[in-house]
Structure formats: structure tokens, C-alpha cells
Amino acid sequence: MRPARPDEYELVGDLTVETYVDGGLVSPTSSYVETLRDAADRAAKSDLLVAEAGGEVVGAVAYCGPGSPYVQVAGPDEAEFRMLAVREKARGQGVGTAMVRACIDRARASGLRGLRLSTQANMVGAQRMYERMGFVRTPDRDWIPAPGVKLLLTYALEF
Image (cartoon, helix red, strand yellow):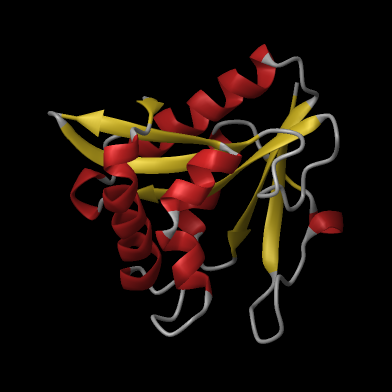
């Protein structure tokens, strides 16, 4: 795990779009695709982290601390992570867990109270991973980000 480099932003954007669109999480015609593709903006407004294996970027996640405009469900003494993406050939190898662990470590090192996330109901594998890592459902913060978008489920890990 390491911060993404500017020369990798396009790659990270493509990886994120590939994960979300090919995984059936976002329609290819959704306006959200441009947000997913804009890794440079995420890097400027959050901590954009990448997972590297064998010299190749195989995953990315945006760690959003307090004050980041990418924060959606975290309170003032919490962080959240967004747009976690793992290249298909690297799934099942602990890449997602490593990226979440890096976000947990950053939040703890910052003295925050906890870490939050939003996920889609159909992302059952990701939810199992979050629960194994100690995250618990927080239905009181579930939300719908835009008209026509399904309800997002929220989870929290308190420190």
C-alpha cells in the first residue's frame, strides 16, 4: 500500500470504472462514472492509496479524513473510505483487506473515533469482509445518494 503517483491517476481511474461498471455496480451511462474516473480529484481532496503486487497496481481506495469533500457519512471525528476497487485478477488475495486495513491505520493514527463506509446491498462479499474486520451495520446512516439510485448501506468501525 502506498499513495498513488500522479502518473498513475489515469490508470487508477480506469481501474475504478472497470470495477464498478463491469461489476454491475454502476451503469456505464451513469454520471457517477466521471467521478469514478477522476482519480486526480480524489488525490487532491483525499488520500488516494494504491495496492501494488508484482509491480502492478491491482487496487485503489480513497481515504477521506475530516474536511474532505468526499466525506459522505462520517462525522467530524471520523474518517471514511470510498471507491475501493480491486482488479478482477487480484480478487480473493487479500488486496481489499489490505486497503481497508491501511484506512483503519490512518484513522487510528489521526486520533479519530472511527471509520465509516457506504456499500451497495448486492456487494455481499465486501460486506462479509467488512464484518470480519469488525465493522458493524449502522442503518441509521443508510442513504440514497441521488434519485433513482438504490439505498446505500453503511458500516462503522469504532476505535
